[in-house]
Length: 459
Ligand code: ATP
Image 1 (cartoon, rainbow, N blue to C red):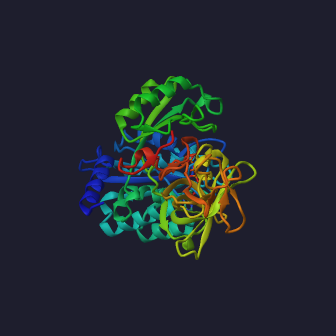
Image 2 (cartoon, rainbow, N blue to C red; image 1 turned 135 degrees about the vertical axis):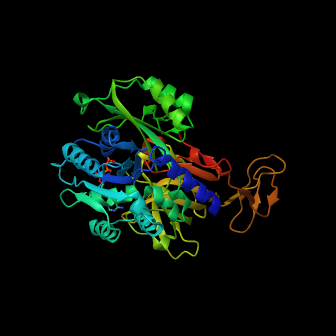
Image 3 (cartoon, helix red, strand yellow; image 1 turned 120 degrees about the vertical axis):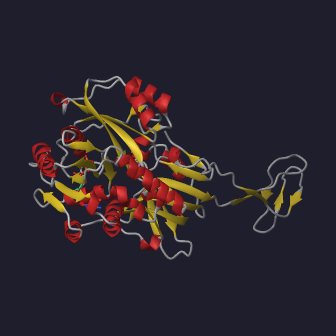
């Protein structure tokens, strides 16, 4: 991306977040994370409550839902953190309300739920401090950080913050307030953004099965795809925009176009909705992927690794498909896995052959790359030797013996050598992805790639 385009994108994002905060009031940025557990709650719900509650103190921006490193073991589900901008002169009241809302709603009794809150005064952020925030934010999407790392950055800036228990949530809270400043990083995947409209359930229904009319969700997808995506999985005929956990989320519509997202929402029939909230997000952007060489790979990081298939795919117990790729100079190799939940994607992987040049996209754990996408860059041409056919009767000739040629037993014709033919590969070059049901929140669906990319989207 050109420097000018980068600056434009940055201005657009900043304008969007500050859309309602352009007055002369000081703007306070609020980051929040780690309020939920597998038994309930969702940090986005707390953000939605705050958008409403804080509006009496000033204008509130569109909240940010930022997905962080998807391999982090401490995550409840999608490793999401939230941020809000508030233009207010009543800073004291705002902070008190934020603390109170988190304390009342967070799953504080659950082991591992350690909320963190960070406050940043927008007007005090000069570009060197913006840069520091941005670098922390980018690191939280791609690397593994410690609570100490967050505390050090908080102390250096310095920022007001609140932590419950050990405050692991400070990592995500600090990362989320850095989201609008990611233009300080050079990688364009970090600059991308999308939207999600989340519909929340009434409290008395939390933990009960969700009542959503599947046919209406398929219709919403039909009428708004590709401006919305990952609402349903066509291959499994399944609605995937609704979670199965006891959290307050009823469903979420993701996409690039806010009007299309709202149109999809209007089409869906479901149980009564308590409230909806639109978020600006880094979902569907591949922001987590690092371009690297195979020899530099570390566990708990996600990569795009270019390599040559060095071990043919094998299907192992459970239906998982595993193969290996090597660096072009053969010095390092890594196993890549298409696990059973990736369903039809495994049929593509099974057709790879030694020598194919690919780029594998995915997260590394236990020294194995869990495939999210694959780019087949160049299929290796395999030559197959076949017995020639008799020029008189057309039947396949027999080998006379090693290096002795071929003969037709009926017509007694002779051919000195086998026929060499190119193996027909039942596979096209280009990018392939796992189906929506197996897609990570942060993974970029191929339908979002520019048209010049030879992509095979899965929906
Ligand atoms: P949900 O998506 O439902 O809100 P979650 O999956 O986001 O839940 P959290 O409850 O937020 O899970 O837990 C994730 C924890 O991991 C948070 O404490 C967050 O601060 C921390 N964390 C996030 N990114 C990193 C990282 N890169 N390194 C270390 N810790 C991280």
